[in-house]
Image (cartoon, rainbow, N blue to C red):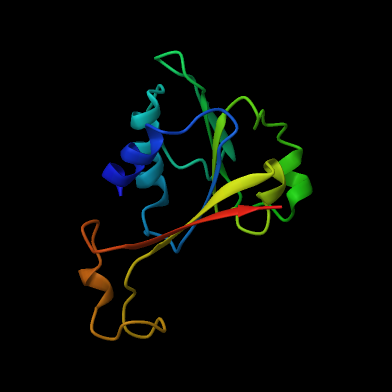
Length: 146
């Protein structure tokens, strides 16, 4: 996930918005950590769950990274209240589907999937205790826009 983020981060610029969707442990923050490295911003990149948004300034003269978590937000209006400079930053919103699409006219919708254990409604051949950071992921990237 980190290597994928790093590769994508190298090509991003101010105004790019990425909306990350996936279950706990799918790699959203790990992906963002790699993306931050590809962008050349100051770290460390950690989950913004409790602060809602963190800004990581560029170390190489590029756009800053705004890393947001919409999990505890109830609406797009609450996200708007954070007053993020989406046009002047690269913005990554974890748990943002259905909330963050108004940040820009177009965005990247990135869904991260990981196997889940028996009883969770997915692959019955994988036990919860076997789900580690190295478990395979499926990543679907779509371009969204108005």
